[in-house]
Image (cartoon, rainbow, N blue to C red):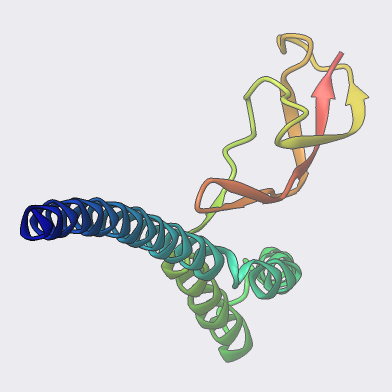
Length: 157
């Protein structure tokens, strides 16, 4: 009879051990899935961080691009080496911005949108629909679709 008890006891211990094993396995599987999700989320956060890490530098480069365009407008009728040098520098800056996904906002003739435009004044302009952008004072730019500088514009009354 003692042998039967021992066999029953062993069977009970085996069942308890199997139950513990299943519990530990399920816990390990949950922890592994949580860790894998965390790794995936962290990778995505790093991708976003890298994507926009250049934003400050690129935004600081925009006034340089603006001044180069202004200089080129002043030199547009000249054919000397200085104007050619400014043109080459401006082309390099534009290519650099484009290579880093900085895009110029399309503004002239568009409807004013406070999300992308900053109104610097209203002007009366014949044939222009009220609220339409009639003059761009400072170009606006986006980086990967995110606004990094709004366009400063004048709108029609």
